[in-house]
Length: 111
Image 1 (tube, rainbow, N blue to C red):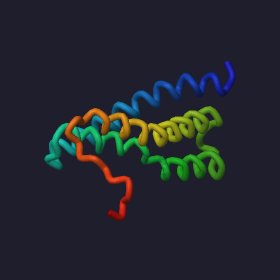
Image 2: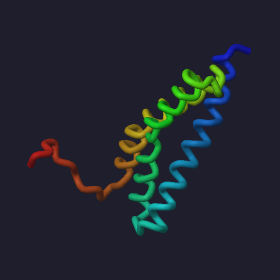
Image 3: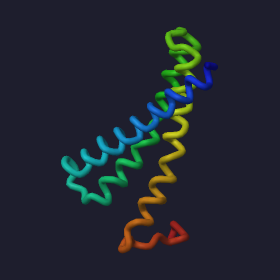
């Protein structure tokens, strides 16, 4: 099995686990500690998916500078962080469309 095949298998498991875990942890924290309603709590959970900027820096240090992770780990972590970042606008747009009484947004932000 090639490095990319192994990385793909690990990516799927890691992505699903992080996707569900981050949404649940942030959404439930917003609901029970922030007092938000369920709709806004899940919206906050979706917004927390894209926190990968620091992950890319850590991966660079771990792989390039110190060689403490393998090439397989690098590909897996990089792909997962990238896809989690991409999923933020997709999930938020999908979720915002589910609220029937959501206020309409103005096309011009300066009005």
